[in-house]
Length: 464
Ligand code: SAJ
Image (tube, rainbow, N blue to C red; front, side, top):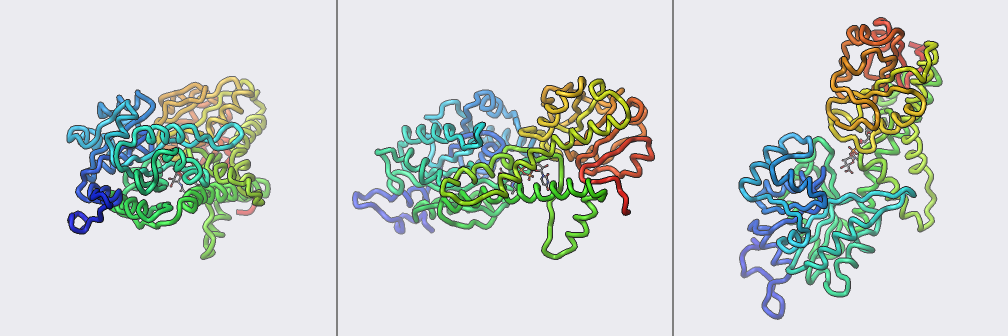
């Protein structure tokens, strides 16, 4: 056991090496952990680590979030999180601060869980990371392990984080250790996924490797693969780009199927019987804080002159999907002979995916923006989200559909799978339309109830 002092290596002046100092603190759980960013990644991360017996201090630039969390109020709709936060606050294992300097000074391990957006030109914005690195540099009062969890453009650790942390004063390996361990948790199951998922750790020196690995082993249960920092950065981006490109493929096939009068779902089911084919799902677009942005972080390293077209084309296609859903809706309204301008359209779902309250970069945002230019009254119904993207928000489905001409199912919330069609029909205006962005409903059943029905990726079925 490394905790035995006899086995600890000492520097020439008799002090313990940075590696052994941190290893000891990690083993006996006396290491204090600061988590920068208490969002959908940082908060579950802080809670998961504090639950393992480490003292965690959370910091967020948004003072409102810090205040809520310190009062046990969870701003994230995650199972278990609220109860755990209250318990940890009570047990003094988790505290928050509005003073970034203190958070660094009081900690042995600093975890960075902050956003890494792209700008209007789809280039990475580094100010958040730069600012945290400067704060750490200015408050490096003892040996620390710095763990970057945020998704970043290739070479951010070596080219930006490391120089900012050292900045002529400190040395990695001597005063601090540095590792990149991108998060892999899916919103909605963040706590469980933090603990159980396999992880990648990027490190460029042996000491950082040993200490980061040891810490992660203490707080997670999945398999950990160690590599260099740039490989870890690219791997993280590739994971989300893989998903985005595959969704784009599914969407492109859906558009083709619509034109050919077949059902994309049927085609995918047949194709997926091949042992090496596993198609993603076509839908009304790709949202969330990661997939719409991460492919651009990967492309931002294209200065090297690598030829690339699939990734950008996939992004464009996925970005086009909400527009396509708007086009489907408008053409169905026109077919009824109604005035599109005067039609009342209800968007079902503003969350970017099923059964969560997160509406960041949701396809509904663009869909509503397009429809608002054409129709006078756009309504939204989403029991999970407060957001309305400028449309009129209704709290019940009954109110939302009253006298409406068209419903558009955008989010794949489970509740939209089992709609009470006969009731909805009685509430809506004559010749009601349902545009099904998720192919949730059975065409025959919907049409038998007296609706006009159009599903994304499902042409007028002519061949069974
Ligand atoms: N979507 C489709 N078709 C599909 C799958 C998803 O249209 O077949 C849409 C969803 O409706 C949603 C969007 O894609 O709008 C993104 O959803 P998602 O579940 O693919 O991704 P996120 O952003 O919630 O989480 C992803 C995850 N990455 C991967 O699965 C590779 C998660 O593990 C990461 O931690 C997260 O990004 C992140 O933070 O990077």
